[in-house]
Amino acid sequence: MNRCAVALGLAACLWSCGDNKPASPTIDARPDAATLLDASHDAPAATSVTSFCSALSATICAGLQACECRFDQRPYDASGCVTARTNDCIMSFGDNVGPDLATGRAAFDEHAVQACLNDTSALANDCDLNQGLGSPLPTACSSVVRATAAVGENCTLRGSGLAFCGAGGEGVCVPNESAPTRCVALPTANEACFNDLCAPGLVCNAGTCRQPAMLGAACVASPVANPCGLGLVCDASNHCSAPLAVGATCDSTAQCQAGLTCTNAQCTVVALVGDGCTGPNTCGSARGCGRAPETRTCSTPDNVGDACLTDTCATGLVCPVDMTCTVLPGPGNACLDGTYCAAGATCLDGVGTCAVLPGINQTCAAGSRFCADGLGCRFSDNTCQPGPAAGQECLLNPPDYVCAAGLGCDFASSGSICKPLTGAGAACNTDRTCNAATYCDGNTQTCVARHGNGARCEQPNECTGGLECAFAPGGSRCRPIPSNAQPCESACTAGLACKGPGGECVKAFCTLP
Image (cartoon, rainbow, N blue to C red; front, side):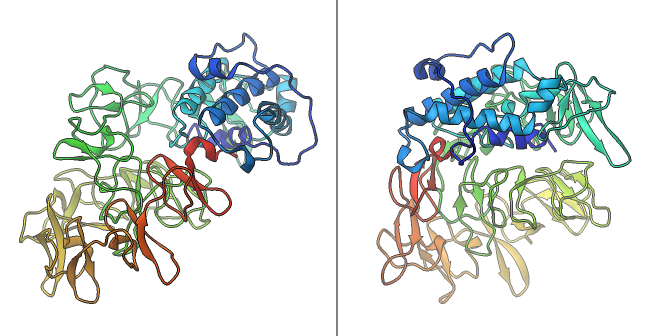
């Protein structure tokens, strides 16, 4: 559970519009779209359902127009966008928390309201959507309404979608099967996180609540969580900065902009959506690498609530048995489906509890993952170690086999051996030992150059970078990954999504319903 997930039901309903609900009062005042996109919002002294819904709807509609989204694919036109969204938002509040707001059991959190509007404007400016756990809403929008119960008091709420409580949202309403739901204080600085939750202003970093470092502040990169504030990364100089562009000096992929990877200490474009991949770092930041054996491809990850297949969800989420992207539990919490835990953690076998993954020289974990990312378990002494050199046995860290940079794991009759990545014509038995320009042909057991535009193909990994293996009359062929406004089957170029009747690549912000 996290600050996004616990109130997601309320937040998600604010995005819907035109779903044939009964009409509600029309909002006449429409804030200027350019002002809403270009300037910060000042939250009203006392936010009401009408004022909040009007401001949020105007911000979204201004973004839809600025991003040149197609209104013919929506149940309303551009001129009626604000009215339609505002009316539906008001109805959503009425259905969910209207009675609690009316009786004083709930109230607007003015700081969260302002942050929600500001963050939504920022997303609209970039034609982007939130890729975090509050997707598609900014995180702050999930807690604009909170219960007024003080810490220690019962949360006597009638509506759904509420979770936070206290005068400043410093508590969370925790259900109890044998007692009334109570407002429990969220952990403060240096205390263990409560299901990834912390008191306002703090972030859950490696299982502990900490102050997020701000722009320009010193930071120490963590393999488990980002120690910097929202939208910032800990750069190669150990200072919080904006995500790095192509060519910038980096220490890890997490420091680079979405779609880039850190290679040879530089943010680099290595693989595009639809390209073959061999592991989570191949596709770059904010990308997923499907785990279908030998046909793994880079993909735009699915978000909370999206229908999913195995390993198509965004970082921090998982596709459980109900096939819907779900928040992963952190250290100390019960494993999801008895298997899954948040990044940097593993589900301990025989215990069913998530625990932090071991680092270098630490004892391997007994669970779905053995070691922290980039390490593998050396079974001779059961410790986590970096990838071995050429000629040495591969280390295992399910589902990956680990070797040093520039090497791949070759499965020979004598076992698994780390070997240099090879090019066209070299013998292979999996894609793991072929370099990025080639793939392992299952018929000839050799590395074969990836096919160019128009060539026949059978698997996604057969096409060269920037191409996808797409259906065509007479058989699938490699073709350029579609870009803005082009028809699509699943993949689109970076920053776009395949949506709409028949499939069309559109800017991410245009995928809002």
